[in-house]
Image 1 (tube, rainbow, N blue to C red):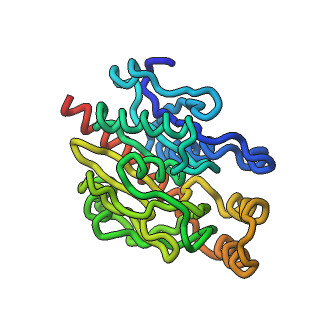
Image 2: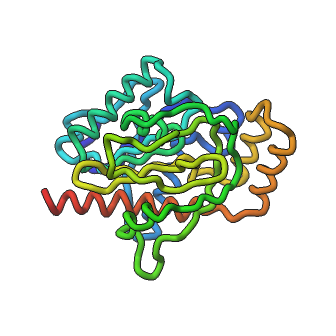
Length: 272
């Protein structure tokens, strides 16, 4: 891989038939929402995709050590983060290495990425007893996250009290990691009490979200209609209605992710 500074986007899923042709793959959407935020901030982020699930690609130790990798993003996947498939276990080992050997490096996790990072930290991860959570959903941000993330927001903007985020999951992180007391919960919804993990310290830098800031209302409705099986009809109708009537704050979360990456990386470079 090239030595130029870049954000490593780890691809953790294969193209979704019928979806990818219209909306792109999950990792492409995530790159897009963070890139848009960077451009609005008159900056430019360079991304490089690593096909973990298809070609066993990871950022090299050389690129990690020489600073070529500015951050690592872990996107969504249809697979289970708590499974013991060989590729999932290798991914867990890689994340553990990043946390141990490169604690300054910002880690971003979305949905599956959030869950697999949580697993490595020691959180319990499994199926939600409430079943699927879908559609644009109000996520109340915790006091702890708002206090710890103040550096990501300008004095004019300030950290909001909630975000409307597109949900599309039936697996959840069930608790916070006891071995890492600096990790706080980002937010809560009625169906999922831990909606993200956040830490910004000398020993750990991560920002994860259970929901999907990269999804649009249209892409969410597509997935609900085509792939969510076994849910009561009234729940599906409620999810679709939320997509039609609620504001999607995905762009705001993209801006927060960009701010986290850029400011944490700059802090490390100043110390170094």
